[in-house]
Length: 112
Length: 111
Image 1 (tube, chains in turn yellow, brown):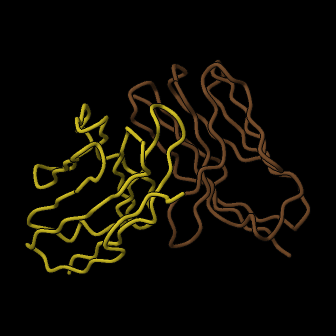
Image 2 (cartoon, rainbow over the protein chains, first blue to last red):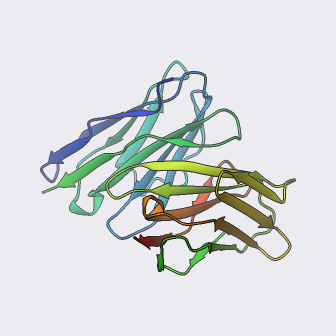
């Protein structure tokens, strides 16, 4: 079946602009996660959703970052007023309850 | 606060060798531990998931073990192949749905 998909695969934006990153999880997966991987760094947890609710937003780096999930499916991560330090690969994963996480290919964000 | 460490950071071995990758975690109250591989420029591929009630999981040439009391997990790769070259990541869920990742072991298997 189809895996986790993310769009766009690459995004180049100017400092100060807003960006939206999209994640389509595997059908039937109730949990959805966003991570960030900066160059040479490990994966940093951002937020997770159980259904449409986000019980843990503690990983969001600042109030410029927000995320939503609708219909228990698609999720959007929005970064407002982007900064150069936001440049990273943003990864989305989904899982059925507490089981294995399946990752999408990621969105590479470059802020110039 | 859970912290996850992976040693070594990089490893280079000749084809055919059996090898062990190590993952240490500070909070033994984990719910799941998952091993992934990441190829350059790609997302993560799930290899094995070990639940807290389990001690090991096997898939093909891979075997992962979990020892909560010592705060360790190991990934054993038998008869390594050049195609196994990748970065291997472990991640621990301490019961909060929030996976904490190690920084990975970069493996290179030489033909």
